Length: 131
Image 1: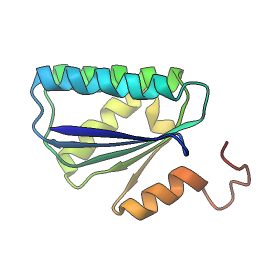
Image 2: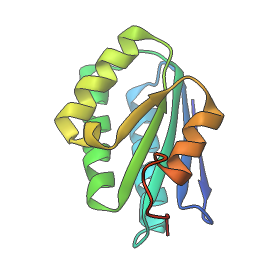
Image 3: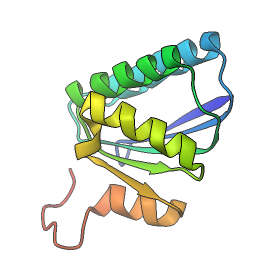
Image 4: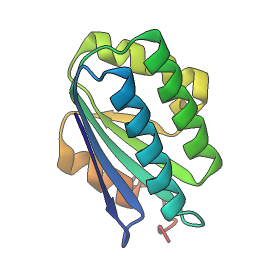
């Protein structure tokens, strides 16, 4: 199961991926995530990815995740905050992020409030406001 919400005011895509995702559902997730990204095109997009209950993905699903991450980078995604609890999932997501180049804009968090604060405001030394 997955859910995707868009906060247009902050150009924030907030999604939750829960449990094991069959390939047919993974395809729907990727399509909806692309549509959400395209709906914010021209802005600095940030993503909060709640993967705390996600189960390790098949190699085919991992390829789909890599491809949608690359799509995001080409279409304005500037920061990605991941919420992950499983070490196995974290290792798989690390590999996918390295392959897509998303690792350069990704941070992992334990708490949603902290993730959201970073997405909206960046690091304290980052003086440039988000637009």
